[in-house]
Image (tube, rainbow, N blue to C red; front, top):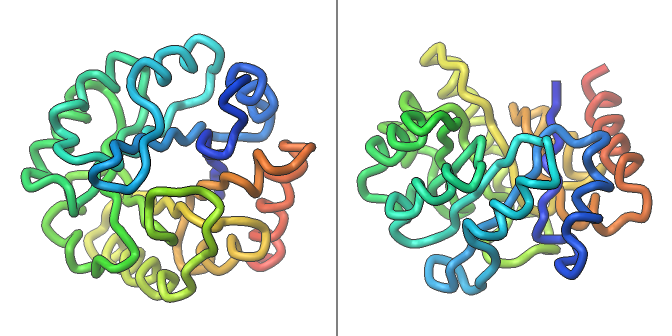
Length: 220
């Protein structure tokens, strides 16, 4: 079953409560992109915005920390209401410890991986997480084009999960829409982050259903 996680990065930030309300029907998660202007070349939201959004949504919050020294801020995002937190393997030297801190705080722990980072970089941490977040664009900005070479890496990670007998889910973020979703789902992804493909449409539930239908048509 494919889960759809609309990315708040593509919403209208002048009316976040209204924007979130438009995806409550149809979304499985709300994806929140946290950027610090250091690990990635952009600055977005922090724990205060997550906490404010928590007051207006019942969706699970999927916080993607695209920041340097992520372990330092995990506690703040847990307190703000995060249900899932992913940290980049490129940014956290003590990855297993960071994942344990997330789990100890009652949230699901994820490892995010950039397009140029090989799947082998996950080998030592995949047993300690609940999901892998595969970036299919270079992180930092919304609206980018999907990078096709990421598909074989998703397939490789999916094989790694199966061979180890794990229940780790695979999430994909970047350029996901009804055209690109079938390929990543066929490769093993179970959670799809969609920004402009959802918030860029007038009818958000229909946009999410179009992505699900495209995946279902391939799997049928």
